[in-house]
View 1 (cartoon, rainbow, N blue to C red):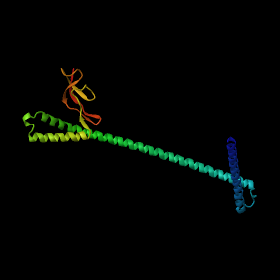
View 2: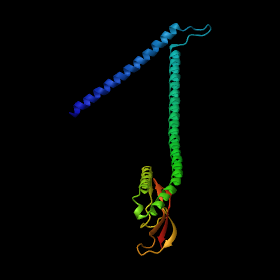
View 3: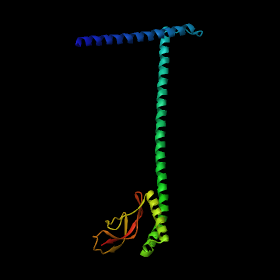
Length: 216
């Protein structure tokens, strides 16, 4: 079996060698024919001797070499231009991403500025509700104000605004602003025992810190 494979491989090698030889011969014959055709049509200036076949063949090879060199130079130029275009596209993509990020930052800043002006209105609603007597809680006006308040809170929640948890939580300077220390039998030291003003988050950033009293 190995001998058969060896014979087949040898035959393939011989066939490839024969094909290469035939191609080289055909190319040489073609060059000779081209040179001969040019010799028949070429006019020799007066005072100059006709070029020999070898000289003409060498000139033909030189011409082909120059064409090949020019083609390679063109390929390099094309590759340079393609690389330049790719780099420009990458720079444009980076510019677009940077612009989108800046635009988003500006939007977030503008939204926070507006929401900060809305929070005092929410505070006034809550202060008003805290003063309503128990007997007046079913009053039509009070119920109407509660519905408006709830609608406002629902809309704020939809855009990412939510209250910061304070009472009963461990004091966090990133969320809470301690304005006083208090005594407490219910909470341990360092725990928020009183909320003086409610704080709010807007998505992942603090819109307003909670003003709190912390157990000493």
